[in-house]
Amino acid sequence: MNNLDPQHNISLSEDESHVPTVLQVLPSLNGGGVERGAIEMAAALKEYGWLPIVVSAGGIMEYELKRIGVRHITLPVASKNPLVMYKNIQRLVDIIKEFDVDIVHARSRAPAWSAMAAAKKTDCHFVTTFHAAYNRGGYFKNLYNSVMARGEKVIAISDFIAGHIQDNYDVEAGQVVAIPRGVDCRKFNPAAISAERIIKMASDWHLPDGVPVIMLPGRLTRLKGHTAFISALAKLENDHFLALMVGSTEGRDAYCAELNELIKAKNLEGKVQIKGHCDDMAVALMLSDVVVSATTVPEGFGRVAVEAQAMGRPVVATAHGGSMETVLDGETGWLVPVDDENAIAEALSAAINMTSEQREAVATLARQHVVEKYAIERMCTSTIAVYAGLLGKEDIQATEVMDADDTGP
Image (cartoon, rainbow, N blue to C red):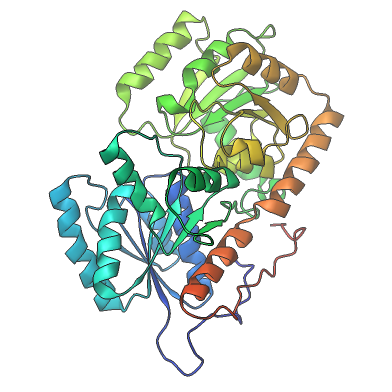
């Protein structure tokens, strides 16, 4: 991300040598929206001249922090074991003191309890990002969830999540700030994708020429709606397609086997394939004709649908959660009822049978929609403005300098 003003470094004072330091705490770095948001914010903070530090249990995305020169500290913060969580408090206190941290930003419940206690012990500011509409339950379940609403500022990743917080938690006026998640519109940009990258992935995946590609990205968990997706594919009258489920299996071998059995039972062998983790999702989306988000529970934001639209691809998404805000129903995609195989099949049929003119119109509108509302720069600068306010610099605002149309490679 190179669109932020390098001269606009928010600091406590021009005379102070201390660099504002933000410690982000999250369970792991194994892929997903929480992880992506943390890395994007770390990059933005570094570019603004602040010091970002990330604490997690580690994972496949650690190399991204190393590549941009951001310090990562490995701690067992993914653990929900009360004893481990208690020990993490002092571990985080030691980090806060060593690096003179100003703000602790927690992005998940288990590490948030340790992070909140550590922030209190060190008089640090404590911020949370509320990523999901956590299921309500009994007293202890609701208490466990409530830590995400205890930040001095609680960042909601969509209006849907902001409403959920207001409806279910005791928060004060102005405590909750809605900042939609962002997408890197330079990375997810058709103009930035070289022919070599497309050819390589198409070859690696053995994609046949002239066959419409239907893609469902996301980790292979039941919440992503793979079974409804497969059943919908079996209902398509035109079987001239290839469907790809792209995402990390994370050891869920039994679930993968179950999906393969369903594919076989629906006579879709060879036409529906599980591709596993993909390191270049921009190219993967470029190779698709329609992208599906069939989540069975409402997602806080729904990055898949937004990244697909940034790549000019029509989307089919279940009509709940963040997708209700990010997908323009009937314009950039189709919103369908949850687990409705017939509705999914109908939408997929409409998508793969669009004319080239219709597809071009959707592509233009979809990308414009994302650039204007969900560019990563807007998320980062809005979040840094929240940090600046906590540090007593309300008069200093992080300004966006990216032109909405300046999204070329």
